[in-house]
Amino acid sequence: MSDGDIRAVAIERIARLSYADWKTQHDRGVGYDGEGGAAPEWADAPGDSGPKLAFLTAAGESVDAIGDLLGPGETVVRLLRDLIDPIPCRRDERGVCRAHGQVPAGPDRLCPHDEAKRWLADHRPDGDAGER
Ligand SMILES: [Zn+2]
Image (cartoon, rainbow, N blue to C red; front, side, top):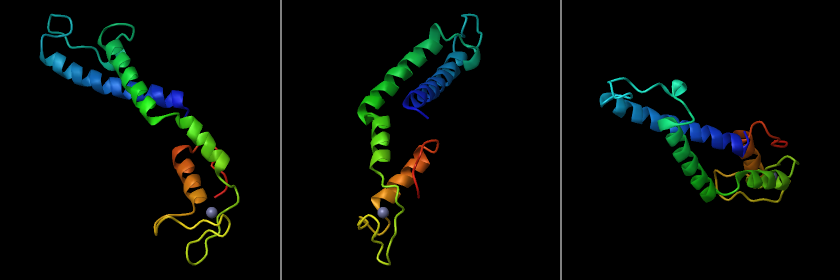
């Protein structure tokens, strides 16, 4: 999933949650049309005006603010792919990777090449995570 796809999914999820909360509160009150009617469901609400547009706009601003804090994810993923050695790790009895000369940073840690490959496989399964 590209950063653009993740952004779009995140915006819709946040906006839907906000809309659902607003709809619940609204439908308990005066009603969507001023005559006691319920607000439309998300799928039926117009997206070019009204509450749905307001929630989508607010969610977009929130997601972009979070994105600014997290940094350029795809650039980091690309660099990670470039830096991973495709040669498989070979751990000795002490856990030291003989292929990369890496001593794991802790008892539950692997060679950084193995950890990076596993992270990519979990977080970018559609991409090339290299040899494991
Ligand atoms: Zn290794």
